[in-house]
Length: 125
Image 1 (tube, rainbow, N blue to C red):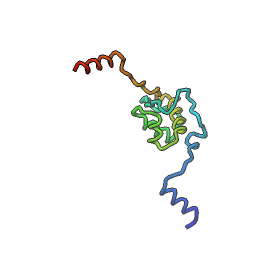
Image 2 (cartoon, helix red, strand yellow):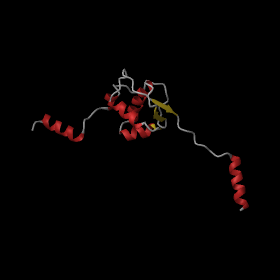
Image 3 (tube, rainbow, N blue to C red):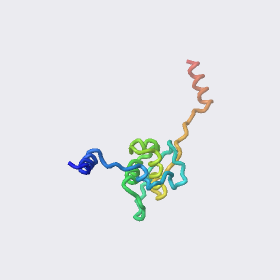
Image 4 (cartoon, helix red, strand yellow):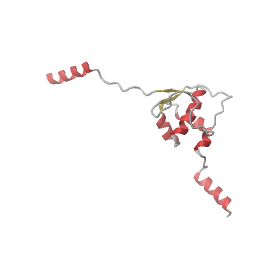
């Protein structure tokens, strides 16, 4: 068996090896101005992929992963890709109007007056 045949056999067994920068065409920052930080929540809009969109397999994979809105960190983890790559891919989808990005919901803290009422009620017991 030649070295080339052995490499092909290993490739089939382990899957193709693609560098992260190849998935983003060498880009390291998303083109979109939206804040794509670690906890940003990304969700699909349900819009149809435009025919003129230059989207690859990984873009469609990202779109499938965000059918249900979820944090960007979860998308990267599920995809098994570096966060920087996922940010670029999601940015491309955002540019085409295929996803929405929003900051995480703020944690709601109970109002002080409600807490005081609860404490007073517990003391009365």
